[in-house]
Length: 166
Image 1: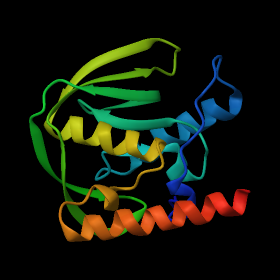
Image 2: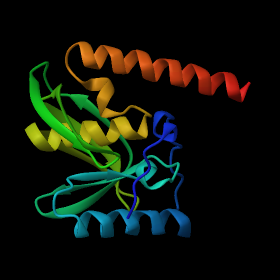
Image 3: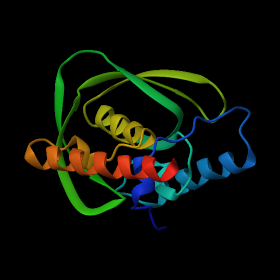
Image 4: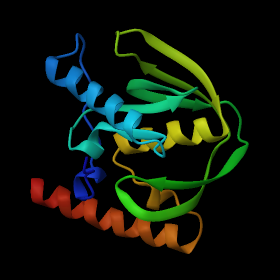
C-alpha cells in the first residue's frame, strides 16, 4: 500500500456521518487490513490513504481499534517525550512532546461513543493520528528549531492553499 505524502495531509478532514456509508466501511476495513499487515505501524489515518474523513486506526493491546471523529482531553499537564515516525514521511523520526495521559473520545465502527484513558506511547499515538485528522503533520510537533521551521513552512503552504480556493 502506498501512503499519501503531499499537501492534502495539511487539510482538516471531514467529520463522519452515521450510519456509515459503504465507502466509509470500506475505508475502515482498509485501515484494519493495512495495520494488521504492517507489524511496525502503530496507527494509520484515512487521509494517509487519500480519504478525506476523520477516521484512524491504532493498535491497542494487539487489536486494531477504529476511531471515528476523534478528540482528546489531557488528564494532566505532564508531558511525554516521544520519538515518532510516520508512514507518510518515510525514513524520518522526530522527538516530540505529547500529553502523557489523555482521555480519548471517538465513535466506534459500530456507532458507539467511546471514552478511554491512554498513557505514554498509546497516548502519543492517539494524539499523532488525531493531528492527521486535523491536517497537522508530525514535523510541526518537532521540538526545537526544526519544529519552528516546519510550522512556518506548513503555514505558508496552508495560506497558499487558501488563496487557491478563493
